[in-house]
Amino acid sequence: MTVFDRIHDTIVFGAGHAGIAAARALRRDGADVLLVEAGPALLREAGWAFGDDSTGCAGRDWLEWLSRLEARCAAVAGCLDPGVVEAEMAELLIAEGLPVLLYAVPVAVERSDGLLVAVTVATKGGLRRLAARRWLDASDAAQLAVLCGTHAPAPQWRRVSLILRRSDWDQGIEGPVDCPALDGARLSLEPTRWANERRLAIELPGSRPVDHAVWLPALTALRGTRPCDGAVVTHGSVEPLGRWTGGWLPQGLPANLVLATPALAGGGWSLGGRYAGGLAAAEGVRAAPASSPRPGTPSEALPAETQSADVAVVGIGTGGSLAAIAAARAGARTLAIEPLPFAGGIGSGGGIHYYYWGVRGGLQEEVDVRV
Image 1 (cartoon, helix red, strand yellow):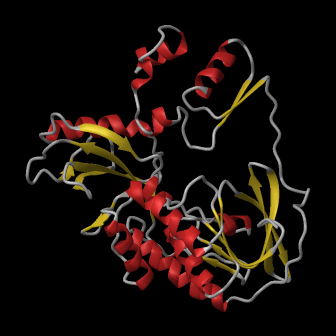
Image 2 (tube, helix red, strand yellow):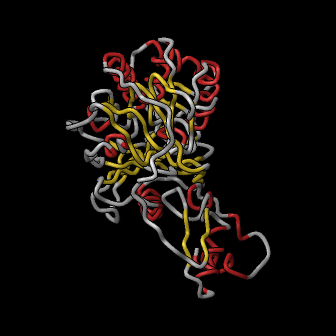
Image 3 (cartoon, one colour):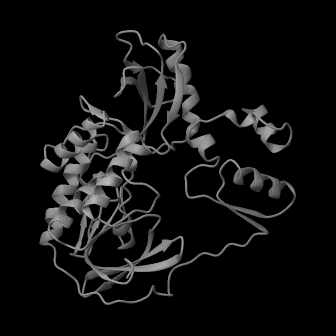
């Protein structure tokens, strides 16, 4: 029997810190809990956005989690090592018997007697239906709440991080960095878990698009104001970390749908604060009424938009992006599909630039010349 064939006690959408906190707490009650994530990873705030602030939660679960990370040299003095966090949490959830469904995007909801009974998700295997008695939306974008008819606010700030390494750093180098080229931005050089590492944090107003174009002016400003010769940028945020001021009061939601999004109470940088919000939301789930869903299949009456093309390229990383460009230049009407918010794959997302070591010629060399 798969997760699509049974009726769960609670389904939690969003496998960030809030969602995992709530799912673990409810699982310890003996409930049948399923954790669902639209993307490919757990704790994206750490492993993808490079958030590392462990403050904001004094709960036993969180302190035990920090102790586990400390034993792996991945947590110290309020900072986490984002690269270790995801792998450690995956091991922990397996040990606790908490099932996780990745790559499942909610696209439609079903209600009965004013309660939420089922959600249709788009998966790699097509549309599938999930049924549960109670629901928790812990996604930053409030995905279930939006499908139920409300509007979720955008974050007031978005933060990306560039990680730099150097054999030794001058004392007192940390602090604000002035960057006139990025109007309205707040930049600062900060310490991390490791002595030879520093983070250039770039905070941008939520109304401003955040993409990798901000990296260059930010690094130029750092170089012009700090002694950082010899420092190397090793990686940067794949996606931004959002921050909300709080105060969002959604209306008209099903009584068995509880929210644990940072737009409710505010905050965003503190991972411990998000975890604490998930623990509080678990209490709301316990008190929520239960629906009586029935097994079924996804509704065929889903809103859909159809596009046609001569060539469709699925996955526009370092190879797919060049394939799409080549097809379009050859005169084909080309549709490029990518789940991430940028093209180029790890070359763009991770800042890896060694692809020009190889055979000369073609589109890759053209890209290299432009770079």
